[in-house]
Amino acid sequence: MSKLSDIRKEYSKASLDISNVSPDPIHQFDKWFDEALRAEVLEPNAMSLATASKDNIPSCRIVLLKGIEENKFQFYTNFQSKKGKELENNPVCALTFFWPELERQVRIEGTVTRIDEKRAETYFQSRPLGSQISAWSSPQSSAIDSRRILEERVGQIEKRFEGSSMLPKPHQWGGYQVDPLMIEFWQGRTNRLHDRVEFTKIDGRWHVQRLAP
Image (cartoon, rainbow, N blue to C red; front, side, top):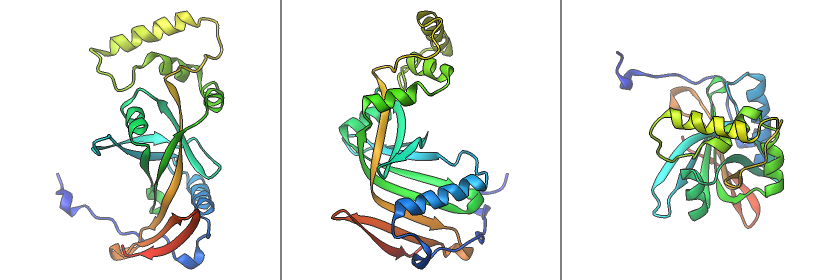
C-alpha cells in the first residue's frame, strides 16, 4: 500500500482571476455549476454541510443542493437529525462543493433559516414515492438495533398509505436555506499555487479579493 504522503496530483486545467469572475458570486456559482453539469461531474450538487453544536463542536456530512432561490442555497433534511438539531440551536453553517473533474472547489459560509412549509411540501411530494416513504420511516440519526426495524417501519408506512401516489410531508421533515456571507472560488493550479477568489458580504454588498493559496 502506498504511503498517504506520497499521493499527489498536479492541477493544470484552468486559471482564475478577479478580472474574469462575475461581480455577483451567485452568478459566478451558476456559471461554474453549469460547467460542472456539462463536464458530467458525478453528482455536481453534492456538498459537504458543516454545522456546529451550541457548544461549538463541529460535524460534517454530504447533502444535496436542491435549489437556489433569492440568492439562497437550499437543501432538505429531517429536523430531528443531528444536523437539524444543530441548525436550530446554532443557525450558521458552511458548504463545500468539490468538482475534481474541473479541479475546482467552492466554499460558502452563511446563516440558515427554514424554508416555508408550503414550498417544502411541494418539493417533498415531487420526490419518488420510495423516498417519501423513507422520510416517514427513518428516525434519522437515532440509534437503532438493526436494519430490520427500518424495514418494518417501511412496511407499516406502506400499509398506512396504501393506494396513495404521494404522501403528506412529515412534520419533522423540511428544508433549510443558506444566506451566504462568504463565497470562495478555488481553482487548482500547478505546484500548489492555486487561485482563490473570495467574496464577502459587508453591509449588504459583495466585496471581492484574491487570497494566497
